[in-house]
Image (tube, helix red, strand yellow):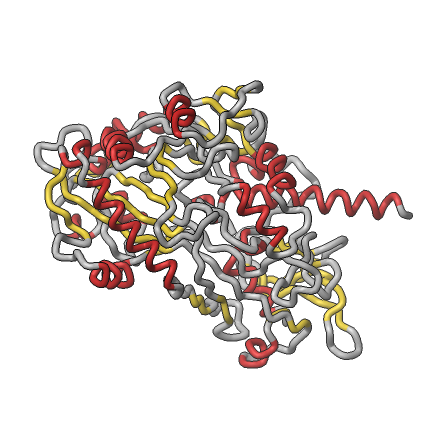
Length: 513
């Protein structure tokens, strides 16, 4: 786990239909939109003014435009104050991001004042809210852990450790019956046993959690036997149902001169390195370009590939500088100019429109490379394996070009760098997407919850691993499907709800004694 410590900070919950589908399609009783909303509200501190008596007139464009043009507010039905995680509006918005919003509106996309207001349709464009407190990144570590670390006798944090497996008590046939702790390697590579008094909770994320279950003998029999792991529980759904958001980009170089809009020049130049002024603004005032999540504006749309009644299948993101369509391009490259600095040249000034598959149809899986936890698991992402996914991505890139052709952006536009003007046909666009797509970092679903009789659901609706007592999973891997947007907010909702499930079960056990 821990991915939110380096995520893009965007705060999106998805739509109500996402969670209602968990119940109706997957049998995850107790996880409807009505069930989960209190935990979204509980986990967050919304910095916008909360309106307690606002009545909505539905998804009408006029209502949305009217609200979007005012100072942003939040409905008390969906937002609250006082939660651990601060959710705020951007402290710094690049002028090009505003130009993008104007251009997108000219193509017919409505403004959306709040992507997390379920009385509004998710579709539309706007600036994104982020998980920041006073311009600084907010994560579960800063919001939940740091305030209590060192103050609770029942909390011990061990870093630099690797859990090898869950220790299981088995019956005479070798089948697991109860989890009694974990075996781990400490920072000195010594084996340490940590025993559980009540239960073991796995929260290692959508890659490491299924890996750990399989290393413990819980997973598809064929996969476990292939690497020599004794089967404690044959659970065919462990590691399956992987969902991720592939993304592709349109990058355009700007005309020159380009004053006060070149993002990289505001905080990094080849001659002087990092800008001291910009750094001081960030550290002492919580303002300036270093507070930017890079993806400042964007929205959600339905492509022609989506079926009637489906939620938005695409997310658009606008980035006010040039990005390269390289799946191995690192965050450090984004900050410093990457290959451009290696070639002793500045990154071209410009902007990028990114199309992201918000609700992918394709499913991948995680399997073991070996029985050694130090061997990274094999990830079969299976991006774009579904024809509807690819059709949506092609349409998304064409929509990005349509937005880029509108006057608010053409006023700044120079040459199209990626995919390039020679890429025009649907077939060529598809090839470009296949060769350049990259992850939007929202992997979920590899240990999904579901109905008790669903053998492909390793967990029940209480997040307990089926077939073994005292073992529960609480992370993004439990989601049956990916809510459209980023996975951070839904994961924190899951943790808050899981805390109530665990607490209620413990209190019931005490009452029955």
